[in-house]
Length: 171
Image (cartoon, rainbow, N blue to C red; front, side):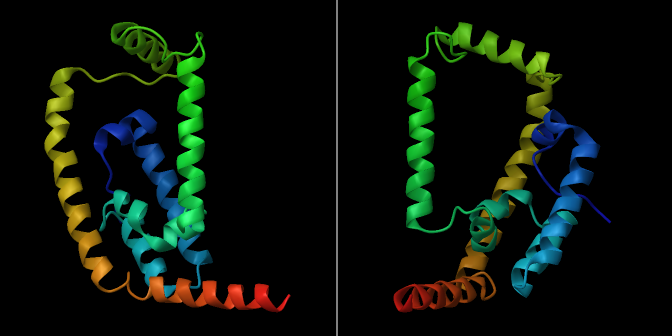
């Protein structure tokens, strides 16, 4: 059995094999909790490395589970991110304040303090092809899933949303 197929650099920076094993368990737990068979199958494929992890960022089941589905959720997320960026840029003590070289060194220092090693250029070059493959594979899968409404997930979510709206109207 495999582990989630993800950018190897991200996996390394997040804890390597241990991180992937933990992520696999979390995905399997999420799959066991959902009543959507198509979403469950996609989660298990991601957990086993048969589907790139990044496909979840476009998956309506995942977005719904994370509270990121719908116009209002997207608007709130965008608003929150913009506000945090504005605050970080205005704070003179922020790591993001200063010249690009100063910012890079502060970020590098913080990451190293957290135990995250920054790869050198050679390592980045070696991992680029794998990241490119994952991106192309994820894009292809996402395009195919959209053609089927993500195996019926979009339809199930729309029905649930309509039922909830109907309940709200009668309350």
